[in-house]
Length: 104
Image (cartoon, rainbow, N blue to C red; front, top):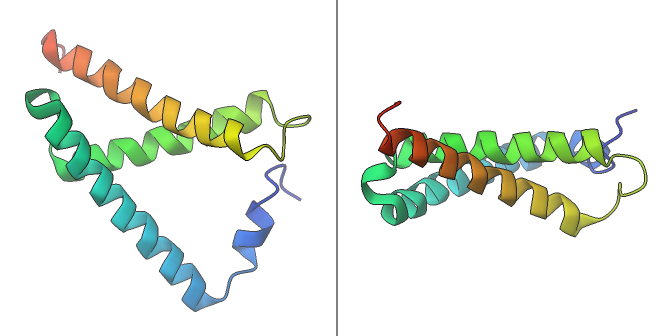
C-alpha cells in the first residue's frame, strides 16, 4: 500500500478515465508552458520545455511533500498543492537565474 492516499484512487480508474486523466495532464502542462513562456519572455525555454519543467517541478514537490510530511499531514490537500506549486515556481526561478547568468 502506498503512503499517498489518493494514489489508490488513481489505480482504480477505468482505462477511459486513465486516458482522460493523462490527456488532462498533457493539456495542463501545455497551458502552463505557454503562460510561463509569456511571463518569463527571454528567460523561458519555450512552451513545451516550460511545460515539462513545470511537470517535473510539480512531481518533485509532491514527492518531497510526502517524503517529509507523509504521516501526520497525509490528508491535507492545501499542503500538497502548496508544495507542488511552490517547488515548480522555485525550479523556474532557479532556471531563469541560471539562464540570465549564462550558466545555461
